[in-house]
Image (cartoon, rainbow, N blue to C red; front, side):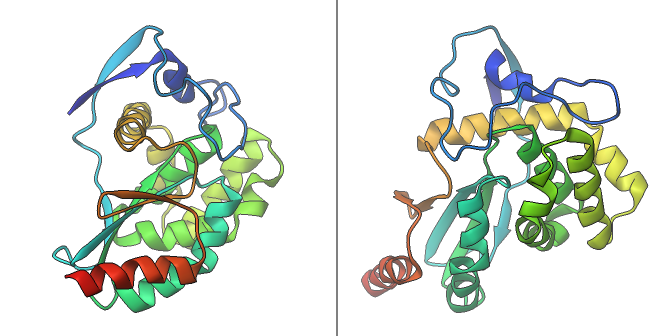
Length: 224
């Protein structure tokens, strides 16, 4: 699919010196900036069909859960440290839920983290994602682009990626631009306004406790 990217989002993929992506700082908030999804500035058409959906679980599971998350969102990190573990053990690994993870880009750092997570392909994506969320305070902490990239490289190496792989992924301007277009396409279609957000069999839900999450899933399984 081809997507017209507003100039406000294209700012995420500007390249500057030093070998890493530099952009206008959008901040670390967990609400999408007003107007970001419907900006009327000049746009560029980008084909997003090359972006692979990152999926766990049985493709034919009776329930599909789509999580929208930002790697720089503390609430998302908390979800993955807690509710997600129960979700995976009780529903994903048992074939009851197909889980789809979609990245949201509030800022440049979240985009860079996504490029590192995707650098290992589908096989390593969720393992790298886990490391990124676990180390969130460390790699986001300084707020300095060079230090952030350095910490993300450390995570990539810990996951088994070598420096050449990481360099290639972080320098892929076309991939960065396509990811931003893909994010905007998904967020616009599902009307995502904050993270983490969950689309459970087509129904939108905000962040919730494990008890509430489990109740929704069990009710749907009971209706099947």
